[in-house]
Amino acid sequence: MAGRILLTGVSGQVGAALLPLLQPMGEVVAPLRAELDLSDAEGVRRVVREVRPRWIVNPGAYTAVDKAEKEPELAYAVNRDAVRVLGEEAASIGAAVISFSTDYVFPGDGTKPWLETDGTGPLGVYGASKLAGEQALAASGAAYMVFRTSWVYGATGNNFLKTILRFAREKEEMKIVADQHGAPTWSEDLARLTVHVMKRMEDAAEGRSLADTVREAGGVYHACDAGETTWFGFASEFVRLAQLKEPEQRFARLLPIPSSEYPTPAKRPLNSRMNCEKLKKELGFTMPEWRESVAQVIERLG
Image 1 (tube, rainbow, N blue to C red):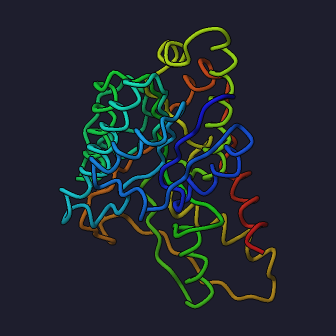
Image 2 (cartoon, rainbow, N blue to C red):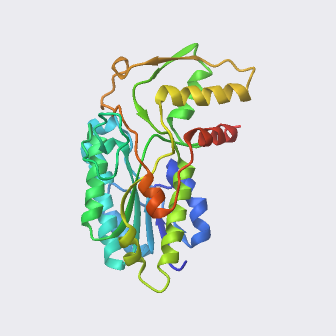
Image 3 (cartoon, helix red, strand yellow):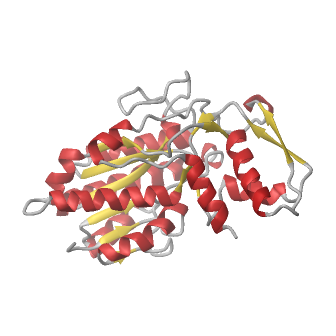
């Protein structure tokens, strides 16, 4: 593949998982935050013009859900304005953009898995800023794909799995929310999906414009691991697996509670289930079942 790949958010979970998988595909430019501050729109524009990438892969985001309620300007600067600039600059040079969004764009009512065509209705600033980023990218004129995902975790970085495991070694019991439904998604599954799609688009673009090829298949896709659970179910599974690995270690007893017993500054959607059939049908990728991925992460944690 000729041309550079600009990767944002390389210190985050998805960005870190993407870097080694993207490197065999070409020259990857993966600036750290000091070199690419996504809250600085003009700085983002300058970097894209310097790099002139063929692909822009953007897992970088403002993801502090509760903090966003007090920092809406910063959340929108990173999740909307930076994405708009990435799209505008990509459109001007014929580059393609892959960006990531969230289940938090939905209001979380009902029990049906959300389709890409369903109406949105974010409950807080984080979800609203991510939705605004989707809309800004669509309006930028760029050839793009957005992968909406949920409950991202991995073997590195800060996430629910690692936090709960740490506390479960220290406490007698822990209360975990059991009425929010969705799918935990391993960062490496998202990285593999991204590389699969990029290779598929490159193959399809043989002899023609990459931007035109991506534009034909582009838009919003739901991309989370298969199956569903609750935060309590997720925690119970990885604590169970950790206990099997460390039979001598004493882990906390987990207690299910409703969201009302664990109030947070930002309201969480109760229904984060997402239908990923479009991803399979249009892009030929099936996300793994969430328990399979959790088992791999627990093994890696050593």
